[in-house]
Amino acid sequence: MAGNHLSAQDVLNLVKSKKLDPQQAALQLKALARQTLKEVDGQDKESANDKREQVKYHLKACFEKVLQRKLTEEELDKSFAELGVDSMILVQLVEVINQVFSVNLKPNRLFDYPSIETLAPYVANQADLSSLQQPSRDRAITAVASQRAGDIAVIGMSGRFPGADSVHEFWDMLASGTGMIGEVPSVRWNTEEYFDADHSVENKSYSRWGAFLDRIDQFDERFFNISGKEAKLTDPQQRLFLEQAWEAMEDAGYASHRIGNRRCGVFAGVGNGDYQGQMHQADISHAAQAFMGNENAILASRVAYLLDLKGPCLAVDTACSSSLVAVHLACQSIWSGESDYALAGGVFIRTLPDFYIYASKANMLSPTGGSYAFDARADGFTPGEAVGVIMLKPLEQAIADRDNIHGVIKGSATNQDGRTNGITAPSVKSQAELQKGLYRQFDIFPGSINYIETHGTGTKLGDPIEIDALNQSYGMQGQPGICPIGSVKTNIGHTVTAAGIAGVLKVLMALKHKALPLP
Image (cartoon, rainbow, N blue to C red; front, side, top):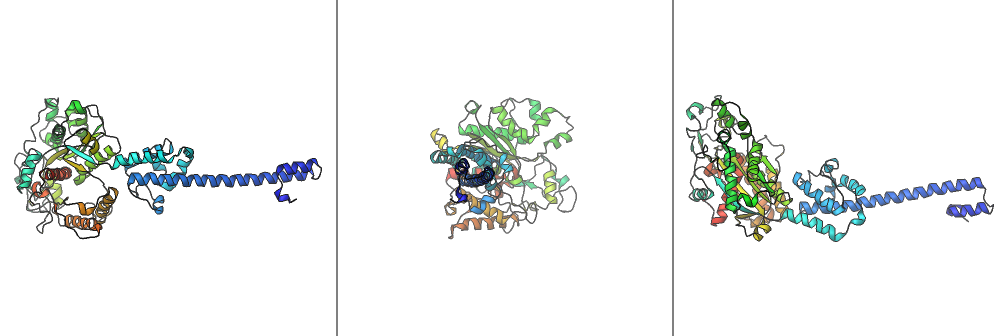
């Protein structure tokens, strides 16, 4: 009889038969207890490790479905930010994880556990893995991922541009190759007072050219149920965006009673206005209407307030990309299920010469009043003004509702340049990586693209970088190809926070007319 193989019952039987001393039996039982605890502890650890690995496997599947790409083992240790998870995607991920694991994970927990590797043990402690059933898990992941990746229809559009009071007049101008850049109109400011060709002169601009909207002082306040005083003290950017948001909804066939009290988001690209400076010069006393009428947050909120819209409402300021980022966020909101519809666009109006003076000191403006995108004559940009809004809706729903569809958004992505030669200098690498990632994420073959509306500001630094990045991403198809490019800035100048939406509306009108406008 080998002592190492005695069980507790064997020890007790030996004591009863007086073949084992009670003290020795007690020692033997303690040793058996220690051995049993050690084995159980080892089994528990092994079970916990197995559970974490199982959770990690399913978490990886969740991320792959939502991000629409495969993850490598090395990426399991990377932060969610490094994987391309932004705030909108994070909300989608939490929704999927909660459905798959039957837990109640909060989005802020992902900041405490910022990688799949660190999140897995936390979810393992919360989840009952017996509830994991393959079919329901796949349905949960696929439902959210397919919603996120679904095409989005543009069902309404509206805009005002220099020399064009509608998108239709805008197209006529583009199709004829007409440029609207001219001298700053006297109703804005006296260029003789603020112009000097010498770049070094303080408080002067070496540019006296631009492309401006007409009649920015005219507004039908009664139609929007706004008092005359409030309208007078409200930044023209607010008034114009409100008008175009309404007209975009009209173009879509949605009167306010059809869209009111619905989850319709409003995403407005807008920067700091200068209208308060105008009021200061006119010695207009401070008033609550002026306070609200010149806050960018109110610009987007005013649309939701007047039209009784219940979706997210954001003013977006990312400088020249503001209106495109607004469209991107609108798409994300629809993909996440946060919005059923969305209004997105941007506006840019200048009533004082300050923007010109600051941009001149940064040597950004063209000293000739040119806007020569991708041209040997490129010598800087010339400012322009614009306002544009599009209305978005999931394509599947738009088809079911028989909406008029102007175009379809297949995918959207955004990033930052990171550290470059200067805070305003773009990065070839960042732009190329963004484009390549977008093609992979939304399964877009670069060779299928037959036109690219570019940023193309007419600068000797930015334009070549943009072309280099496009060559890299377009070249990923592995074979040579030809793709026309263009920039609306050659016609209407750089409209800054409305620049992106001007390009979008140009492309939508080109699709409508089945033609590319003259360069």
